[in-house]
Length: 296
Image (cartoon, rainbow, N blue to C red; front, side, top):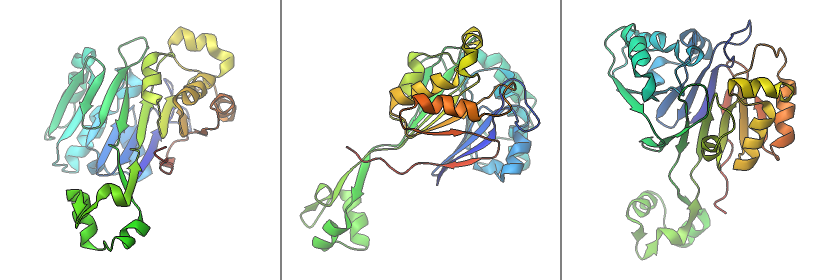
């Protein structure tokens, strides 16, 4: 299953209806928790998310609304007797703060610290790109390897059925029939997470070709001066990012508490997103991945 579970959507100040940040990406056998702000552990309970699902925790930067929930989440994983390794990715410049947060969590978890200080791959299929914020910040991108989609009519014509299909996929050829003869290229799906940044090349690289893009939308277009002052995106800039990247689905989040209704932000993003599906996220939303794109 591939699904985004939204645990919190507020920016610096939570509201009565919006918790601080928190996003769990369920990606096949992995569970990637992004930017667990204060209250994430409680939001997981409301969302029906088990701590045992988490295999990686990814911090974009070391501001409180993106990491103060970390000790509670780690402690919950200990209480739930999680035995698998948990990888914690974060900017290397935040080492002291991350270690302090980890130190107050309950001991007993196989936690593996994975700091990074430059763009590049940090885990299988997971890469980071630098963003432009007031402290060192990185966005994340998960890319499924390209594969091939089998064509039932061609399999039938070649009299390949049952276990023979798996053998053909493993070995690439069976009784003179090549895998390429009965399949077509399949583009790997892409997920991008862009948080707390002014417009920059790193954000564009992350968004490029994304099937699902989670992007901050802290301010409305009318408050562009504030966005520039604090190095954040406006709704329109998030929409432009989706357009430039050819994004399928754009999920807006990290809303300033000044906006009780995010409908305006969604409309501003939609006006510039060039047909991308735009969703203004609410706490506890579950967002499934869009259908696969054709390889063409």
